[in-house]
Structure formats: C-alpha cells, structure tokens
Image 1 (cartoon, helix red, strand yellow):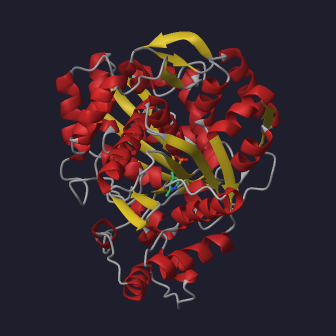
Image 2 (tube, helix red, strand yellow):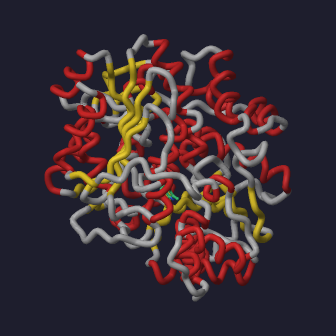
Image 3 (spheres, protein in one colour):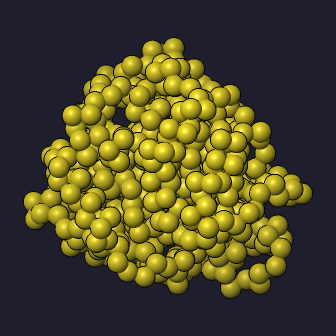
Amino acid sequence: MNYISTRDNKVKVSAAKAISLGISADGGLFLPESIPTLSEEDFENLKVSDYKGRAKIVLSKFLTDFTAEEIDACVEGAYTGSFEDESPAPISILGPDISVLELWHGPTCAFKDLALQLLPYLLTTSSKKVSAGKTVILVATSGDTGKAALEGFRDVPNTDIIVFYPSEGVSSMQKLQMDTQEGENVCVCAIKGNFDDAQSRVKEIFTDAEMNAKLAAAGYNFSSANSINWGRLVPQIVYYVSAYCDMLADGNNNNNEFNVVVPTGNFGNILAAYYAKEMGVPIKKLICASNANNVLTDFINTGVYDRNRDFYTTISPSMDILISSNLERMLYMLSGGNDKQVADWQASLKAEGKFAVSDEVKAKIAELFWGGCCNDEQTLETIKDVYDKYGYLMDTHTAVAFSVYKQYRDTYGDTTPVLIASTASPYKFANSVLAAFDAEIPADDFAKNDALSVLTATDIPAPIEALKGKTRRFGEVIDRDEMKAAICKYLGI
Ligand SMILES: *Cc1c(COP(=O)(O)O)cnc(C)c1O
C-alpha cells in the first residue's frame, strides 16, 4: 500500500516513509492510496481478539511494508503495562442506546495516549527501514498532545522531542503535566499566541529549507507527532473497530449500526472514525461536536470554511482550534482524490482564511456528517445533567459531545445506538468540572482534585496524583518568532 500527498498524488511513498517524514514536502498530508476493508473473516478474528490482537489486525492492513514481527513488537511495546486496564479503551454503558468510549486510561489521561504510546514504536521502526538519522519530533499542542507525546517519546534513543504550547491556552493541570516532564531528550516551550499560531508555525518549520539543511548537516531530520502524521491516525482507527466488537459482545448494538459523536478540534479523531466506517464498521452518522470555535459546524452546514472569526478560549481548550489540519485529508477523499482542488482550497485558506466547496462535495459531507456546537454554559449544564441522570462524570470535552448529541437526537429523533468518544479524564479540567456543580473551588490544583473526588465519589487517576511534588523543569514563554531559534538552541545547532 502506497501513501500519497493530498496536494500532489504523484508523490507516492511507503508507510514507513510517510510516518518517518510526518508531512509531505509540498505541505500536503500523507494518506493511503486506497482504504483497505475488513472481511467477514477479519471480523470473526477481531471479535475473539483482545485490544492488542485487534490493533495488529488493523495495523497490518495499512502498514503493508512492516513485517508481522515488527507490528507485533510495536503493539506489544505500546499497550503492555501502560494503561490502567488490559483493555486500553473500555466502554461505559449509560443506557440501552448510549455508550461512552473511554479513551483516557493511559499515562496522561487523554485519548492522545492511544496513538502516542504506539507512535514512537512505529516511528523508530520506520526510521530504521528508511535509514533516516536521528529524529527531532516537533509538536504544537492545544494541551493534550504535548504531554502524551512527551511521555511516549521520553528517552527513546536517537530521538528528541520539542513541544510548543500556547501559554494562555491550556488548563493549569495540562501546563503542570508538561512543565514537569522528565526525560533527557525533551524540551517544552510556551508561546505567546494560540494553538493555531503554534501549529501554523510548526508546519512552516517542517518545510523550511534552511532549517532542514541545518538539521541534515547535524544528522537530524524532523518528524511530527501531531495528527498530521499518519502514524498518529492509524492507531485511532483501532479503537473504533474494537468498540464495535465490544458493543456486539455487550448486546448493545441490536440493529448492527451506530452513530459516533466525536468532540473535535484538529479533525483527527473523527477522521479515524470515518476510516473505520469505510473499512466496514457499520457507523451510520459521524457527529462532529465543536465548542464556541464552531468553524467546523458552519463548514458542515454551509460548505464554506471560514476562519475569519473571533477565537474563543473555552473550558474545552483542546478543541480551541480554527484550522483543523486533518480536514485536508477528508477533503481529498470527498473530492474524489482531486489533489489540485485540495491544494487550491488550502492556498485560499492560507491567503484569505477561507474556501468554499462545490455543491457536490457539500452533499457528500451532509450524507456522512452532522455538525453541532455548544458554548461553555451548555457544557457545564451537560456535565451536571449527565451526572444527575446517569451518575456518570465526564470532562468538558466529552460534555461538548454529549450536548451536541442531545441536539442531534432532539432534532431528528434518531434513536440509533450511539457511541460517544470520551477524550479526557475530568481530572485534567477539575476547575471547570467543579464549576458545573456550583461547588466551592479551592485555589490549589490538587485540592481541586480532592474536592472533585469527594463530591462525585470518583477516583483521581494515578498519573495526575503522581504530579504532586514534581519540580517544574520548563515554563519559559517565548514569542512565536523565536520558535526556530529555540529549536536550534536546544539541539545545539
Ligand atoms: C485533542 C483533543 C480533542 C480534539 O481531537 P482532534 O483529533 O484534534 O479533533 C478533543 N478532546 C480532547 C480532550 C483532546 O485532547
């Protein structure tokens, strides 16, 4: 299976090359030339396998240049002992037709762990195959990717990782998680600006000829741990396939079809659900949930993507994004593989901050997706309502998904079973979650966790508790224009 660039489909590389590069030199994103499907026999095997077994089956469809032994080693390394449970992605059943896919039982308590525990293995294996030198992982984060990537890549040989986060755009727990990161090959910088600023700059640096030459001279090459890297997306397809198998076993999927609701920012998670659907998982509607930064809701409804709007800092900060990178892959698929068209849309997004798709593409979007959004107040109400009704505590991002699901169901009366992707532990956002209960909010972060634990009779995740008493190693705030210099300084080049 070859991988092609969304902006030039004559560029064809192996999976190992795509993962090792992270992004195509033309600025496009790599995606598989065609989507592999799961046969009846595959599904029979998937049903009787554990999570790791399912991961191996799905990965083998996409990473055709990896040997079975390589895939085995990657999956075993990633998912042995790093998650609370044997099953890294358990389902909580709230009602006969509402299931929640909990993706936050890993080392950093957000869904990014599912991909970022595996990516370092995929990347080191890929780099060996294509004989790339030492790798520098550059990450722009809206809060959760940064920490998950740092944990995944810490002390991985021949690898350095540099993370940029918006200084005012992450929760205090997220900041603490990153600033206290341990490891000899890690660097963390806060930047003045928002996530879009960080991500755009990082994407520019990846394709900056001067930087690349400087790096090459020192025996390094860049790669990405953001969801622009295909190696981030393929592990995410696994949990939708796995959830389907679990739902069948639970009997919570009687008519064999379900809707998926995904709290969305960079469009990676929901794109993985789309791939699972195309592979043969019977997902009916992909419901894309946004917060007040509702650029995707408008796009799905109107076919016009327009980022010329106010940027809001919300209580679901990991979704505070106006430029959703992975939409580019979706556009490629929706346009029937029209690379020129995709390149034009992206150029227009860069120059004018907007683009409009044809009626044909718009109709395809409407068939696959439903888009909705909610504000902070609705998010808080939802946390409280769901807790009161189901005794289930959710974080702010998952609450956005739940709120949008309610809107969808109220609008269409669609009672198809639903799977809601729960993307973070409530303890990453204790301040906002406590506010939902009108509870008194202590000043100290750890006291907030204690208060939330007592109030809701839920446990504080061990990795969050373990941050107590760790020293802050990082915390420097730099200007966007200093990002390149910061990279050179850290690498000593
Ligand atoms: C990253 C993140 C999201 C958004 O996911 P995308 O794949 O970027 O759309 C949603 N919720 C949480 C908690 C996240 O960390």
